[in-house]
Length: 456
Image (cartoon, rainbow, N blue to C red; front, top):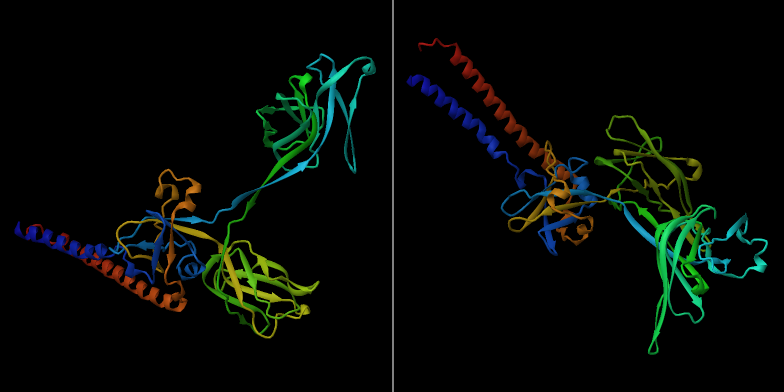
């Protein structure tokens, strides 16, 4: 019995010995090749950092899965990575439009006159179709038709002005059409002009639903008080999606091959969105083709082609030195220049590349200083969704978070990082080697114990 107990005790000690390296394998700041202090400003506890291109180059993975933030106690902080997002910009403009009076028979508050439309190269001609006996019947102003056919944007506001001494409120319905035959209700509007004790109050604007229409029809609810318009102005709005901002690298030196091609090697494969080629000489003209690959021995894939130039025009200089890329992960770039354009000069040109800007958002905990860490192989992403990191998150809140800035970004150097990362990898693989060796020894011990006779 004592022998059996000693066996279990030996197994327990061996298991504890094997598990002790795992306990020591928890993430530490020292395990990462790049360690940069952070300066915080603004209101916390959440802070955001604009990720510069230097951090992309320093990472071991293009998706920044090896990024971490540590506090002074060595604790890894909760964080989220926010990819660059397109931004919506609304632009407004106002345009005076033509209007056409609509008349109906005296006392008929519901009759709507017929219209005839004739379109030509100079615009749209609207003609009121009056009945044959209209001369014998008195008519009254029923409303107005506004010609908005020259406006391509969504209509968001109508501004009217009128003549005459009418005071009080004038209510009317608003309808929209593209053919002057079929009308859709757009709600109601109200004008107001009030005077009291030498002061005047006016209401001349009406909000519209923000849709497109070629024509608007205003029909007064009380035609006897319909005002005489003197101006009609429509406010329109265009919504445009601006692409997510870019973050650019520093100029990268090219390597020129024997056949005249230029090549660049990046530290890792990144989803490149744009490139900029240096044009050092004036009067340069260069048709180019750009190819890329994610591995050193893989096949080249065409990325873009275009014409780069730096030329004089009307006493100024015009320049085209950028090309759009498809956003594929690329680690090597190749640029081929058509020699008929004169080339890019005797010296190899420098190149800048850009990716979509992203932001790091982290939750402050513990004490300063805080460090951003990068450059460790074999790790998985620890990022949380932004809506988990910030409960009840709203998009407009992102710009209100505190700011974090790198205090030593200029110290980033790729060769040093690679060497440090290699040292970290050696420690990690050594740890796993010890662990596997111990597991093997434990298995051999168990087999030998099972083979012994039960009486021993």
